[in-house]
Length: 516
Figure 1 (cartoon, rainbow, N blue to C red):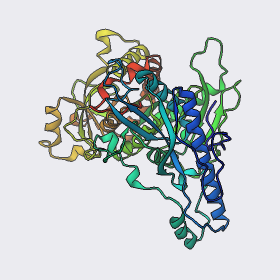
Figure 2 (cartoon, helix red, strand yellow; figure 1 turned 90 degrees about the vertical axis):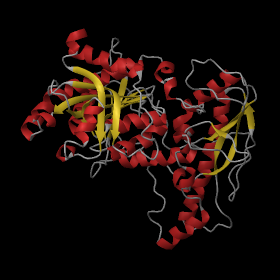
Figure 3 (cartoon, one colour; figure 1 turned 180 degrees about the vertical axis):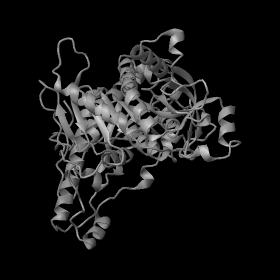
Figure 4 (cartoon, helix red, strand yellow; figure 1 turned 135 degrees about the vertical axis):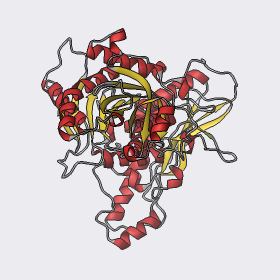
């Protein structure tokens, strides 16, 4: 069952009722049970948001307020005294050493299962209690509204200005990526972070996802495919609709129960009950910048596919926001320029390294940081290529080459003098070039999301084989179906893998946060 898109009201008896001018009060409580801790965090969040939303509606009706309107996120805090280290094989679920650790929580309707699992791991690995309470971090009023609601669209300009004096608005200083970038330093007396993302940072990205992809964040799945060509999306849509028309059988193990398209247009699988989702479905007047499509599984382990278009800026933008959903893996499927004379059009490239000439992440992730290949993802992609193409061993090498992929921010790189980029690509041993793969992999590394890249050679500009409309269209029609099926099969293999192995330790920094 999918979560609601708007938090319900809480009736938790342990809290004091909120007045018209103040949100409900909650005393900090300690818990040694993950589910009970999650229930209390949910009670805090839903009551705070419901009170804030009600105040906003009263403001829109013209009511006067005698004091500032403020509601705050719940927090989870853990204090560890022991230096004893949990199982060294673990990649998350523990703190690095003695101290106090804390983070704010949001959207407990969407993140409830995720938070509960993180709580369970902390309790198991450290044997101490969790404290849940109300933080001093304000919830921006815009983030309290349900996804289909607008706040200030119908307000006159003077009313909008007065709103800023009454309600808390999004504060960018509370949303930076210092934790993920490894630059965050707590001030005196402050706790260390438990999570890469605070409540406001998550809420910000959830709203951006709706804007960029045209679908609710509640539909996003834990495995994500990115592509830079609409051809792949067309094939994914065809396959999704085809799957929905065929009832699941006793031997059917794909588990897909619904298909969602931009505008939150949901198609339930034949024979399955309608998907519960309290979001508004609309026919979009125009497609969003990076439309997303979702093959839904009940356990959220389905596939989301996003057309990021061309260029590293889009690739960074969308992965900045999808990262807050903590997916299990994301993969890039797209076309590339083959840089070796021995390659043929239609060959596959499995990236095991990246030359980052995209530059969009230079301030967040210095170029001297290596972006390693992740064994579990590499094995799954290669196995998927072998299975779908029915080639093995030495024969597989005829169509699949593993090597370095260069990503650039100049689509017309071919027009630069050859002593520039071409020489660097040769020195780096690059075998293929595109504009997005290094960005997606680097942001996966930065946000601790397992990543991988499988590209298909669509042109060889260094060898006179450039893209021409007729040739390109024929190539796309012949190769896209196979390439997409390879990507989806790789996800099936990753899904069957232990997530403890998929979320590799090599993505952890020295003082890593506990939440996956």
